[in-house]
Amino acid sequence: MAVCRYNRDEIATLHLDKTYCIPMVLYGCESWILSDNEYRRLNVIWNNSIHRIFDCCWRESVSGLLFYTRTLPMSYRIDQSKILLWKKLLNCNNIAVRTAAAVNRHSIGLIMSKYKLQSISTNVGGIKKSIWECFANKAYQNGKIQFCHTTS
Image (tube, rainbow, N blue to C red):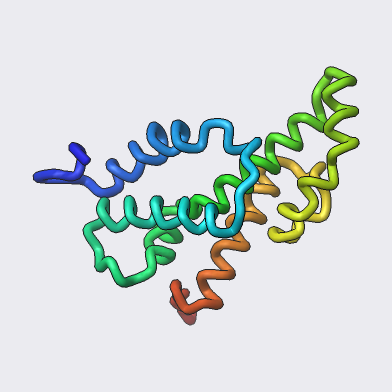
């Protein structure tokens, strides 16, 4: 990466990746049907990018870096995009689009259940928060991140 050279700024490089590269890579991901192996491979690609940006140890998990930079893993981003697209389709003004989305609503149910989302009618901020909390909880339970408890 050209931005990751002499006098580099890791946060600026991460911002450029999140703003320009990831949207191009994930263009149309709402319609992708991915196996667990394909999700894993996309996460590996994103993790390698994080390793390269922060020049950290290649054998360690990047969950801590992702957490502290408020960045979701690739699989979570894809699922979030799918859920938000379905929310838009179900709230569309066009009756044909809304009906087609309602008939095929069961296909998004499995993704929503992974993030403990009860309803697609939850606001966008609530959906994003729920997905973020699932990532943070999983990383914490796996020992990838730790929280400091302070006493006052």
